[in-house]
Image (tube, rainbow, N blue to C red):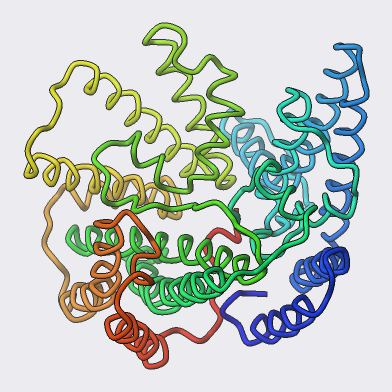
Length: 468
C-alpha cells in the first residue's frame, strides 16, 4: 500500500477517525491491527516474519534484563543477532550469493547446478530488523529498560508510518510515546498537515516525474551521450531525495496528527560542504545506526588514522550492502568509504574556510562528488556503470532532443523544490513555511496544490526504498 494511493488514503482516514475516538490502550490495539493490515496488503505471507521478529526480540530482551550471568546475557544477544541477521541474510542475499557462486565456479571450469529457489524480498525487512536489533543491543548495554508490554513493543516494531521505509527509530524515542497517553496539540496538527502535504509534493511532483527522465537514460538498452548522463544523474539525485525525504515527511506528518513525534531523517543534505556533514544530514536514522552499532564498536576514531579509515570503509561497505544485493551497492559503499577517508585527511591538514564564496564552491564540489555516488547507486550493473563513466569522461555533448526531453523538464521540476528548500535551509527549519504570515503561507499552499493536481503522478508509484 503506497502512501499516495487511493487505497491508503481511505485506510488512513478510517484509522485516524477511529484513533481519535478511542482511549489510549485501545489506540495501541488499533495501531497494531492497522499496521498488520497495512503490511499484509503487500503480501500477507510475510506478516509472520514481522510477528516472529517482534515476539523473539521482546522475549530475548526481557531475558537479557533478568540475567545476571554475563555469559548468558551475551549468548542471548547472539541468539537475537543470529535470528535477525539470519532472516535478513536469507531473504535479502540468498539469490545474490547463490548466483555469484555459480558464476565463480563456471569461470574456473566447474559446473555447478544453480539453486532454483527464487527468494522474494519481504518489504521493509531491513528497516524493522535494524529497529529490533538496536532495541536488544540497547537493553544488553543497559541503556534502556525493556518494555513489559508485548502490545507496546508490537506497535513500536510495526507502526505503519515508518514500517516499510523508515525512519529507523530507536526504542528510547518511540516506546515512551507508545506507552503513555498521547495528547494531540493544534501545533502538531498544523505542522503534521504541512509535512504531509510537502511530502506528497516531493513524491508525486518531483520524484515520480523525474523517474521518467532517469529511466529513459538508465534503461538497459540506452546509449546516452555524456551530457545526457550528467543531467540524468542530477535528476536521480533529486528523484531519490524527493522520493525518500518525501516518504519520511509523510511518515512524520501522519505521526504528528496522531500525537507521535518521529525523528528527522533528512536535513538539507545537498547544502553541505563535506562528506561527514552529508551523512549527518542524509538518511540520518541509518547513518546514526551504523555509527552507534557498527563504526564505534569497530573502534571508531579511537585508534590510529589508518585504523579509523579502515573502520570507515568497513562501515560504509556494509551500509552499501544493506541497500541491496548487488555489486553496484558494494561499489557505492566502497566509494563512500573512500570519500570519507580522503575528506578526513584533507580536513586534518587543510585550512578552515572563512569566506562565503569558499563555502559555495566547496558545496558545489561536494554535490558533484555525491552525484557520482548516485551514478554508481543507480546503475543497473557494473558493466553499465563502467560504460556510463567512460561516456561521461569522453565528452559532455548531448544527444538530439536532449534539451526538450531532459534539461528543460529537469529545471521545471526541480526549481520549485529548490526555491522552498533554500528558504527552509536558510532558516534551518523544515517547518519554516509554517512560520510565514498567512498570505504568503497560503500562496505557497496553493502553488504546491496546483502543481500536484495538474502535474503530479497519480499512478501510485512505489517508493525507491521499498526495495531495501
